[in-house]
Length: 308
Ligand code: ASP
Image (cartoon, rainbow, N blue to C red; front, side, top):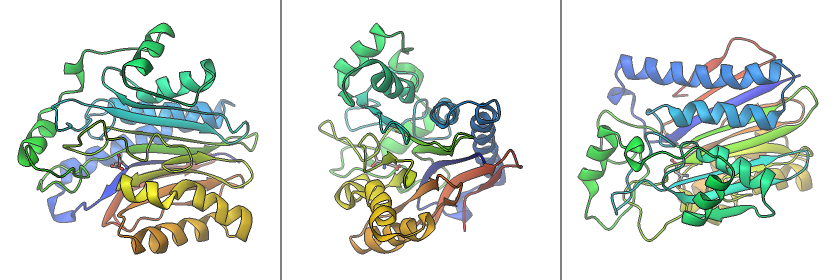
């Protein structure tokens, strides 16, 4: 049994604002990411390699708020966060606030494989990346006109916005993530984001935090989150789903729904998760109007969706 699930962010994505062309472009990008991950699994690759590959595809697409296409912070910079975790070894790697790393998920992977640490931040993380041959780009690589315009609408305000929720009638893009199960029965999770539009003061969200925006454990599940980071941090979302399975015997579907549709909603958080257990059961609940998502099991045709 093998399976891969991806997401491209959740939030207030209104059908009336999505043109047919844009919808087609999203669905195509999600399908490409699912296929890229599944190809690795089909060749006997690990869940860890599959989630990294799927996230790289989404980071390289300007449609999503990760890698190229990341949102602007209040300082006019792109500061990206990412994390990756292996459900077999429970090893994890993460980076926060990096500005010049082409694929933050690969830097997170390098932190996991080549350092004694779990989370590196800012210029130190980039120095580590350079030392290990991780590809850097000029800051202009991350520029995109639509993100710039999005930021102009809220520039100078005191608030940070989920990229989908800035009042933009035609552009709603998101954080990306992937979870997978490989033929060996191992699960893995990866998450990558540009964070919130207009964020300040070195704000770090849930995405690079292990147990919160990302978590993997063969005994329970692998989880990747998207949504209001501050609420997800306070709700310890990814580990909460795993703990409900481990300590209360809930299924991956029940646990994910309990956290996203009840617990996080109760404290005011908007967003969703993708989750998979070691039997290949998957869950993709969200409490927002939409979540870009897709999956494939055993090489079957990818299923890709935005709304319910
Ligand atoms: N969770 C991300 C953050 O708060 C944002 C998102 O999912 O779009 O940084």
